[in-house]
Image 1 (cartoon, rainbow, N blue to C red):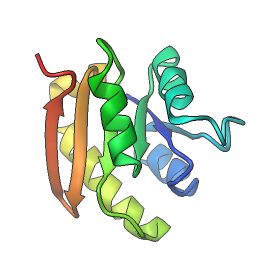
Image 2: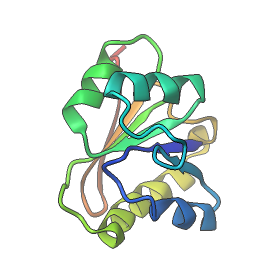
Image 3: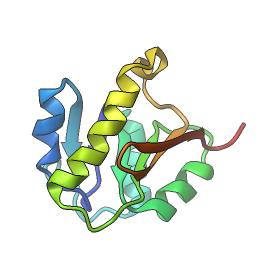
Image 4: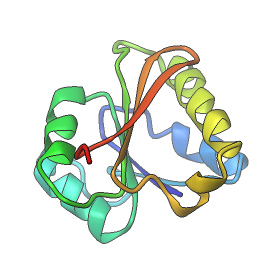
Length: 127
């Protein structure tokens, strides 16, 4: 699984993810800051990267409106510090580590982080 962190998340998450063996890139490090949500979603698809964002409604709409996407992780809790973002994202990564199907990525899946350790996982578009 490869993660693409939206610009509304801290770039400090990238090295923390690397420490636990998860490849991640931040849009600012890729020279992609300022892309529209649609352009960012397309970039993620082209590079087989799951989008991680706090921009819930836009990315859920994009995921629902396409036949195939590499997955979306949305943090429904805003106003978090970088350390708090890490705590919320780390709980997702720990949950996924025990799922053998996640090794192939989160194709057409959404994970909503509703609170620390509280996740909702489902498919979009719905089958």
